Image (tube, rainbow, N blue to C red; front, top):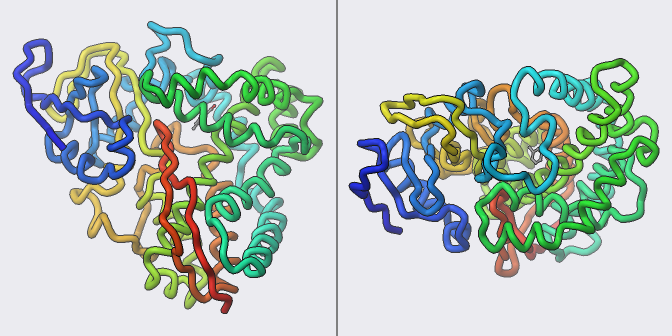
Amino acid sequence: MSASASPVSTGSPGIPHLDVDPFAMNFFADPYPTHEVLREAGPVVYLDKWNVYGVARYAEVHAVLNDPATFCSSRGVGLSDFKKETPWRPPSLILEADPPAHTRTRAVLSKVLSPTVMKQVRDRFTAAAEERVDALIDKRSFDAVADLAEAYPLSIFPDALGLKPEGREHLIPYASVVFNAFGPPNQLRQEAIERSAPHQAYVAEQCQRENLAPGGFGACIHAHVDEGAITATEAPLLVRSLLSAGLDTTVNGIGAAIYCLARFPDQWQRLRDDLSLARGAFEEAVRFESPVQTFFRTTTREVELSGATIGEGEKVLMFLAAANRDPRRWDKPDSYDITRRTSGHVGFGSGIHMCVGQLVARLEGEVMLTALAKRIAKIEITGEPKRRFNNTLRGLDSLPVTITPA
Ligand code: OVV
């Protein structure tokens, strides 16, 4: 991988210019050597391929995430600057918003996905995980992506939202468009958006109040209209956020955990010996694989970041995955260790935009890993894992495994 410092006079002095493309197939296939190049080049880099700044060290990623007034989200958290280009869909009222607008919508989704609500769904999520594991034990050999990482969230999350049974096949393809659309105008993004119309139509329809079952997350969002916290126009767009970010993320999170535990059998054994490690094993998989690899911010003013001057209206690409393996922050960053102190990892982000659905993700991960570890002695990878390519999400398309029951 080449990392050439260039003397281009338009750039801020001292900021290394790199010619790497973090949205290219060869990068997705093995991002780790390039993550190291990005971290070692300097605290702030410039990517000539897309004309954006980049931060790949933990300290700078954390700093950008925690200064939302300077590094804003309302101009989009993908490459596209909403001040210069029309967004491909109406902006998210939470992800693509800044305070004070963000504060109100965030409060609503925080309540809808609160610890109290997790207590109410926990037994259902646990029963579904145990049921899924029963079915996998009957099969013995299966695809850990389709039959586990996708099948389990699909068996609980659309019901928890209150979606009707018809049309659910649009959910993962819709999310795939959303996460590809954060990337640059490469083939992945352009083709995803070109084919998005049927998925968008499905999602728009399911966000309406009359299509969401009573008691579900969707109906709970609409109930906040009656309290005056949000308007009837805003509610469907907040439901859309759960449809956008609530499924494919946990698919890739659970997929990451299974892939880690299958590759590192000593960690699988530790989990089996102590089931209270399940939540930590999931969290460490989120750090280690970083299912959400990157997000952008846009500068609202000229700012100095670790000695680098960045002008107003510049895009800054945050390499969450590189920060999560920065040796400046982590001991043995490239080891999957389920007893590691993972707090501070940026796999769920950090600061005011930190994943509002993190409790749902952790609940799914915890109960699924517990159900697996209770009943399965061994997970063996029996075929070539195939990667799924997306501009933002990291995960597999297939992972053939054979399990040995306990
Ligand atoms: C975190 C995230 C990812 C994708 C979409 C959204 C949020 C949204 O709010 O629509």
